[in-house]
Amino acid sequence: MAVDLDDLDLRILDLLVRDGRTPASQIADEVGLSRPAVAERIEKLERQGVIRGTTAVIEPAALGRTITAFVAARGATLSARAWQTFRGIMRGDEVLEVHTVAGDDCYLLKVRTGSIGSLNALVAKLTSPPLSLATRTTIVMQTHCEKVGGIMLGEEKR
Image 1 (cartoon, rainbow, N blue to C red):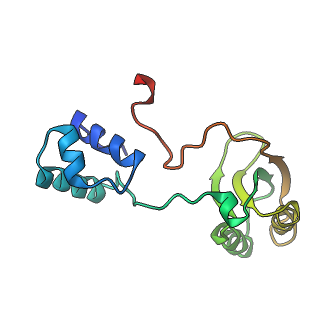
Image 2: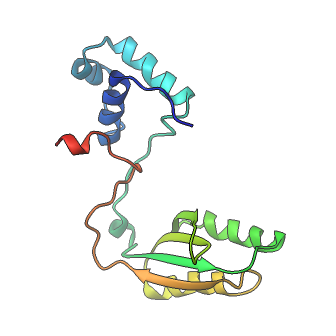
């Protein structure tokens, strides 16, 4: 559900996407509002679910996560037991994203692992019972663009 955002909200969001730790006073200076007005707008954006959280962005290689891959998976409708297994895989720290997709595949997973061996182990969990999914894995050779917050605002203006 889209939320009605004015130009000031969008400017505030743009600054927060670039650095979620930007102080309200600095944002206020940049958008031309008072610090309390900016703080109030940020709280409203949080209540509306526009801002889902603030997080640290960790360099994957610093944690030994040098393998990024996309795993496309398909198979029969998952049983309750299979869904429980799938949810357990999704909770693992190697799995970054999971999407239900249209087309030949059912699911698309973005994963980041420390080795080809650990990637193989993750894929083995998907292909073994109770999931028994067919998979196709694409290993990333080089990342040219990764928008960690999901979106970047105002990029086309730059």
